[in-house]
Image 1 (spheres, rainbow, N blue to C red):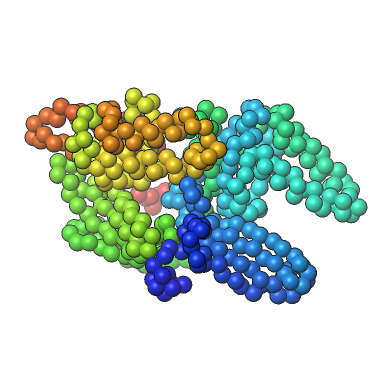
Image 2: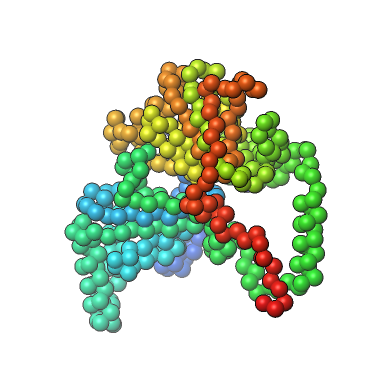
Length: 452
């Protein structure tokens, strides 16, 4: 498939278009699980606008006429897992659109009910649709169950009645979507404003999550000798003592957009009047996708940094900006906050940063733009405001608040003071130290003695 990809020059996942004469539909002979004869499975790799890549599969058997269709995610796993906790307080909350991936675990604590990962196929539905889908699944074998297991069938009927009261909006309850792949989503109708009825968390996957997703091999039964451990530790110490080479490092990877094999380039650089950072860039020749990511090379600073830039002219849009992954972007006039963890570190310009925020808004809220949304929604107003900033039609103040102190805005007046840029160094709060993991660090007496 990689050779065909290089020949056609088209991405693996592309949007369905009327003038696309070869939509890349594959047919595979498959076993029918109903009559055990051979049927045909048709697969199409496509991309939903404002969402992700998907694989559409359809099975049909010419012998028993059994048909089935399924949708699977075809894109990459996100860098972090996500957890949505939604409080259903009124009937309108049942209409919120949700995206549930194969790896997502759905929980309703009030019912002591859980849909495990891989328990249901991926779905684009609503909260009510998710509940109704569960009810329909429980009702499928009820007639047979009432004959074979009448007591179990009675308990299931009682549970279905309780779930139907939640489905009608008669009772308040909580819905939790926990997806280590980071591909699930619950609509925020007030986006980009904060939804007081929903908590969105992005977390680092555990080793068990990586094993579940197939990102890491389960080596729990393997036992490494102490000599190998000591050898690895010594090699790591030698590597840390060596200087980072001043050259571009290239390694093979897949395009995050179309999954075509491509290359990622990485290089450490020293930013003048700041510190050393590591820049990674990917450029896909197949679909034109380009991205860059920045990692700090000097750790966490002693104090946090708050950068305040007053955009007064188009020249301010060309200033270089380093935004770390722990940085929060604020536009006070718009009452807008783009919290840390929502995007990776970026080394770009002010214009590039605002453009990236606009694109990320659309990506993180895929259901907020389209024919079904109101013309004067807050989402569209926010994007329109950012567009005016980018084109120079509006003046505003942009604030970068980084508790790790790893963000930077270029000054055009060095070594003189910059009248449009103010830099404030502040002492972090205990909550910020906890979020950065500083409070969990043990830097004294961390070696286990023989007496212990």
